[in-house]
Length: 66
Image (tube, rainbow, N blue to C red):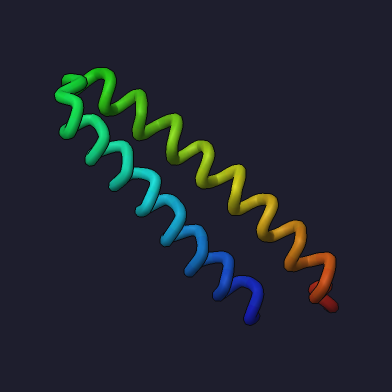
């Protein structure tokens, strides 16, 4: 249960930070709607990849027992 809670918390933080960073960079450099959305997609995918690495490491140290 703890790992699931941590995964939700970390995932929310990473995706939110990725979307906010892309929005800020798009606005700062006035990239336009299309490029800002593309940047958001790239950053959010990177955040999800980071979440998968985090979960793999967490499961190695704390395996889910059924």
